Image (tube, rainbow, N blue to C red; front, side, top):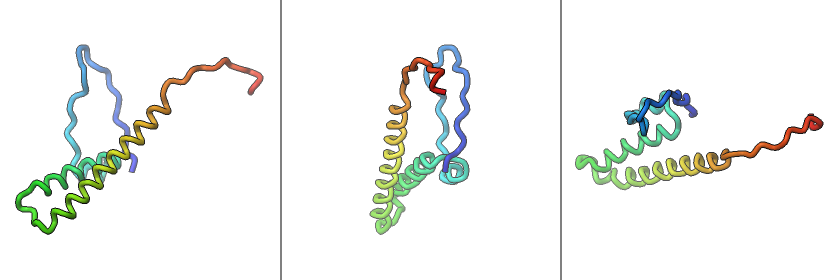
Length: 101
């Protein structure tokens, strides 16, 4: 479920961090987001249900188990992206060998 990449923009003078973005809803993430965005939206939705005092006690065990699973899935995506970023680090240029062509 790869979504569109975020567009790059020019950083304004004195700007230190990107402006905060409103998190996507579960529906928005399902329709146009990445797998990670969908999991983040689900995590928020499940967490709200767990904290809701009107959530039936019989549902809390399943909700907390699912919340833990979603958090692990997000962590796995983040770890995988971190490893990919490390592998794609700086590469030194080698001398060009025209005879190799």
